[in-house]
Image (cartoon, rainbow, N blue to C red; front, side):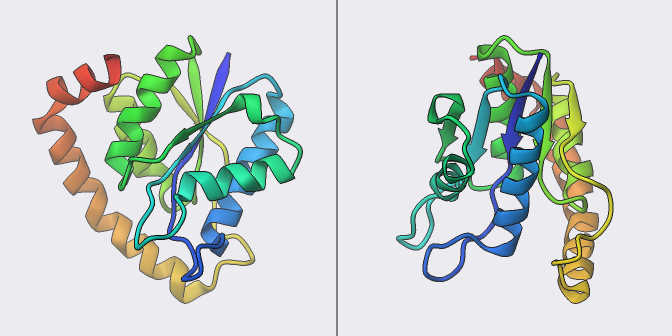
Length: 170
C-alpha cells in the first residue's frame, strides 16, 4: 500500500506554480492514477508572503480531479530534509508501506536517500532524465546543486539520525 509525497519547489513571483511545481504535481497526478486510493502529501512552506507551495500543489491536484479528502498539506517544511522527516511520519500515520516520491529526477537520489535513512521504503514517481520543458541550463545548475547537497544532507542526517527518526516516529 502506497502513499504519495510531492516535494516542494519555488513558486513564481506572483505565487503561481513554477514549471518545477507543475512537473511535480503532474508526477503526483500520474501516480494517483496508478494508486487511486493513495493519500497524497503536498509539501512546501510559504515564503515572501506568497501562498504555501503545498497549497498551490493541492489546488492543482484538485483541479485535476484528485479528491480533496486524499490530500494532506505540510506547509512548514522549507527544505528537502524537513520534507523527508514529515513524509516518513506521514507514511507511518497513514499505515502505508511505501512512499511514491514525486520530485525532479535530479532531486530524486537525495530525497530517496534521506527517506531511506529515516526508515521509509520509496519508489520514484517520475521518469529518469530531463523533461522536455526543463531548460538545459536550469537542469545542469540543479544537478550541480544536488551534487553538493547530497553529501551535506547525508552528513547531517547521519549526525542527527536518532533525533530525526524520533521526529519521524512522533
